Length: 268
Image 1 (cartoon, rainbow, N blue to C red):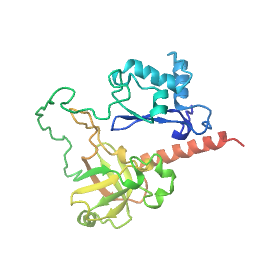
Image 2: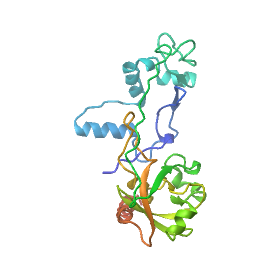
Image 3: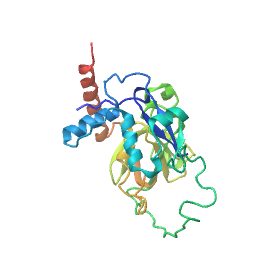
Image 4: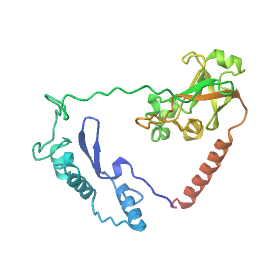
């Protein structure tokens, strides 16, 4: 089943940022696939037996306003008229709330709790002597989901493994060598960057390209309080190799099959 998504230029809706500001998103063209995201969701829901009968995206926001007290006064009409609105927007603040906390916080002066530090269960040992941490680069924004298809690849075109010169020398690894990265969770292959940006005993990579398999090697550990995945601490071993990992082979084959299907369905 193919569920073609729409870009922000092809659909109506809203965007709420960290400033509590709700801004309108208005389409400039009809989605080539014929359906906006909410229409695809509605069709799928109806097929699964949960009726949805919206005729426009504005009706979805109207339902949100009915069910969410802080959004009570927000509508497409108001957003088009004012440009944007900051929640809470209700009878007391019909045009939104630019400043939310003037004298006290909503719950009073706030509440502070002392929480006990719980160290990670992930540990290095003889088999996995290095600690892997992952992160982002500005060029590929968050995960590269959009920017991998732009000229940004000129600056950053693949996920690489940064390794300290001492650790590289111990393993016979040179610049641009392919290296296997193995953890308790899985393994993948990346090209090496030898740099003193990382400390001895630590390696680093990004996760912007799906074929790198960066998240294949991270563990299932998570924070006890927030359940945030523990992507920053993974015990690994790094060795020089000359072929991709088994996971990367399967991913490449799957990707080629998907592209072939798209070409078969392409008009003309």
